[in-house]
Length: 220
Image (cartoon, rainbow, N blue to C red; front, side, top):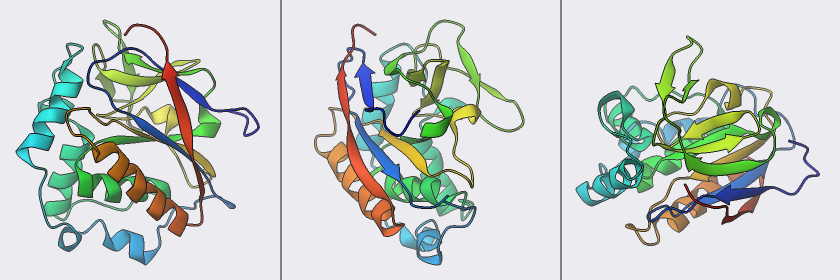
């Protein structure tokens, strides 16, 4: 997407979704190594609590509404993060991703990190269609997103609260990204807390942040 274009996301009607979107722009490419202070936030000692049962239930209800089954290998990314962190298996990826992961760990809500130079307007949030899939890793593995809340661009679905698509992920050359928080109305204030923490970490990385407008965009 052109940096000069206004960034707006259309959201299909949904009874639980309480999203927040943040655009971040770095002065230089993010590179492939996070600063030491950020990497420390990914180790078990940095995390004091697991995701509460209330939070886990609310996030799963959010994703289950469209018919998706958020369990097993298809559970929310926030649950994967906590498990990996407590087992000491949460590795540093890229600075922008690490910032998102560190923030998500503390609040227990999933988020997506999308390279804005790899997607094209219009951006929309809606449910995955029957039989719809996308590749989510370099090995070519696919996730079935039927009934799952997802972010779409002109080429189709590109991110979700479970796994983001490989085509929209950041890399060392990324300078501009969108962080989309998959919050739920069942956890009042949680989306705002996560957004504040994300912005704090992104600005510490030297990023310029701004909130992206999310507008109604029809039925799911």
